[in-house]
Length: 68
Image (tube, rainbow, N blue to C red; front, side, top):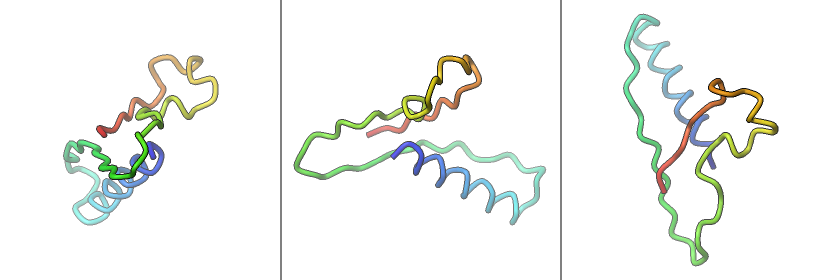
């Protein structure tokens, strides 16, 4: 799910840049995932947890975290 959220955010940003030009300020986005399944949501909310050896990237690892 974090990768999907990141894809949606990047796609929106790319569309905005294409439509309004590259000199615009992009809006902040608060990633929110609504889940209504019967089981508890047990997947990580951070994209860095899905990147192998993310600790070697230090401060340069993506910090996308969605709210669930």
